[in-house]
Image 1 (spheres, rainbow, N blue to C red):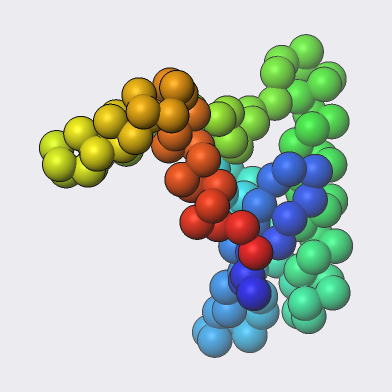
Image 2 (spheres, one colour; image 1 turned 45 degrees about the horizontal axis):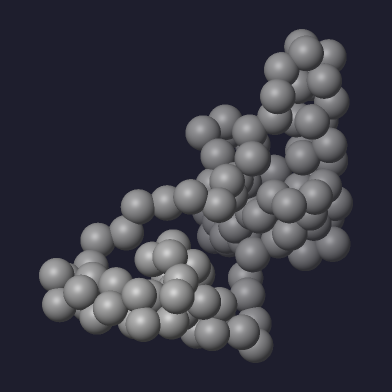
Length: 111
């Protein structure tokens, strides 16, 4: 179960402000600040959708490419021993290191 909102490949947080007695959040995984709020979960989700749609429309009007939260590349630091182990596994199975790491991650996160 996730506390993230998802819409058009964008994900957003769900937080509660006791002081303002409202729900709020922001889109994660991009540099642009896209925030939203609502008095109920339904309102929060609707404002999230509206905020993403407005961001995409603004990018279209300005003729710029919208930021994509997940490009498919990232750096990860692991121990030298684990690096050696996965590299050997990849060679023994005729795979690239990237393919072996992708397989391992895919196996880990399958629901």
